[in-house]
Length: 98
Image 1 (tube, rainbow, N blue to C red):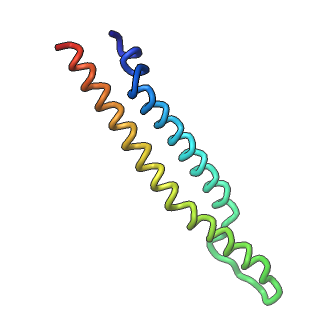
Image 2 (image 1 turned 45 degrees about the vertical axis):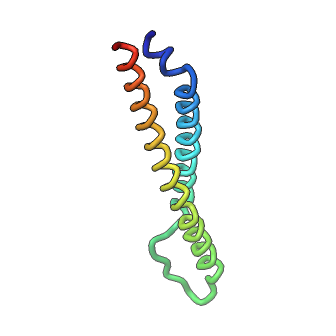
Image 3 (image 1 turned 90 degrees about the vertical axis):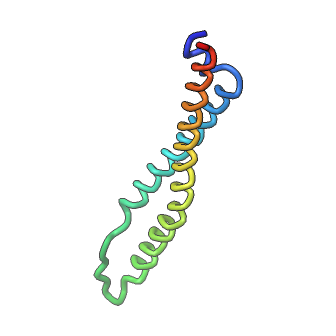
């Protein structure tokens, strides 16, 4: 058995597919966070009439805070899936050689 057939057959193929989906969603969220972060200002010097701008910045900060937990969770899950897939692939490869 070659490495590609071991990797794509059975539950190992499903694990690899799950990793690809989770990683794609994670990268999409990271990209979305980068787009939102472009609209955030570190400091705002507002006059009395610019309350709308302050409210808009609070919304941006709120979105960034809401995105942080899913991004961390998906990143950790993606890494764990990748490491477990590689570990199982190596274990199965070693078992087939002996």
